[in-house]
Image 1: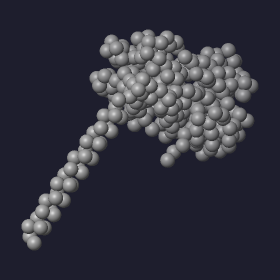
Image 2: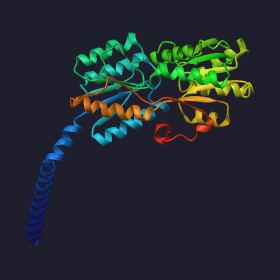
Image 3: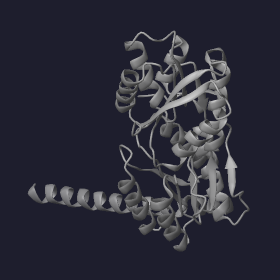
Image 4: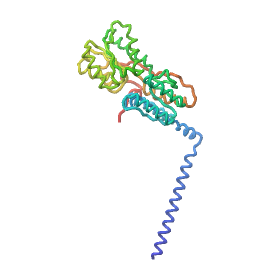
Length: 337
């Protein structure tokens, strides 16, 4: 009886071993067969080898989430691998460190801003020397060896903001400017464009220029300080996406909505909220989704050896309450989970 049970157990073990070996061979064959692509699959596999990195100024900024959204859409269409990595809050040293790390890992292409000529031009040039193309996005580094720029003409954006304020205020205003950064090139261009637009308006005076470091809180603090020191100020211009939001909070706190004009930048949900209420009167609209989308498409063309324009300016315009809602929504709306 015991021998009989031993034979059954032995036979069962052999059958299990044979079944396991057969399954392993089958799986191995499937893997082998799967990795024997046809002509189209080979092209897709080669395309998947492209590894791009998008480095924004601020990782969780809603504006940059729209850039990321556009870049990911293009990456999906072209079959490339895209990483979105950057500082949590604007920090030039951290930003540059991330760029250098991406270059050291030998990625196929890098998309980023050229925030300041002093810090970013050398690092972009070093990356280019490693045969890694760089596409600047949103903010150009025109004196660097960057391969292409895709984004707003920031001087023009500031200029049309100045013209809009002059028109809406009938050429008479005491203006305070709150800018995201006094050193970042795109912010400086937006300020200069604004100044040039209003310089021949005899009734418009620029009373103060303050820095917010691209935060709602500091924008509000600077607006509060300006109104205390210069109660004659009746118009504000905010050059970063968060400036007008901070200004609007203070204007409502002072109950000066009816007597103070605000023009800002971008279309964050809070900006649209204040625009609908009438606290913010106008905002300069960029196309962050298109920037991200076109940057990835351009990078693929660059790697394939196709001609790409040195500069591609995305559309910029001023909108007011009557222009809402904005379309296409993909350029302006961030959906939070």
